[in-house]
Image (cartoon, rainbow, N blue to C red; front, side, top):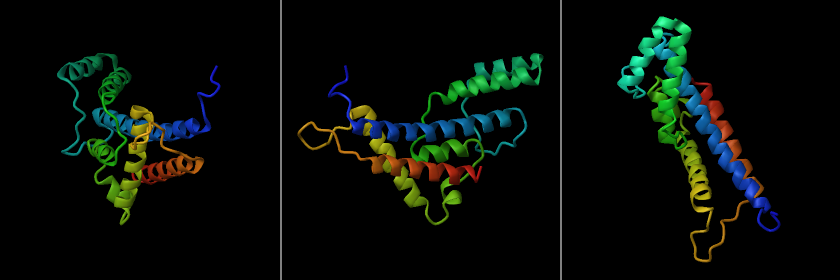
Length: 173
């Protein structure tokens, strides 16, 4: 059924796409947990902390107080997760903004003192390739309609870069 349709390179593309999805998921998780901690009073909000909840969502979270702390936390987690579901946190500046809104300031210069530009550039290149894979079938921009070549090392290097970035960021949260 897939004879001639699926080639090995497609697995490498998939690995790269999933690595970017993993960093996006990680940042969403951190922001969700910290936002709920702020709403529950377990973490102090800084002046720039905001997640953009609607008044309706805030009202529902406040109304949940009659059910106790667990009900409030569940409501907060539900509405913050719903709000964050509208965003992607893949590009370096988006990751920095997401973390800043829950009190983690200047993550790139903190996690990568003296090397932030290099790490941000590396992630940006990976995310751009991911976007070409997902949105343009990884077509080579040159005429001919062929896909851009990808090797196992390309995917493995992207995964290693993202793993290194997440580990460094995680150690400063």
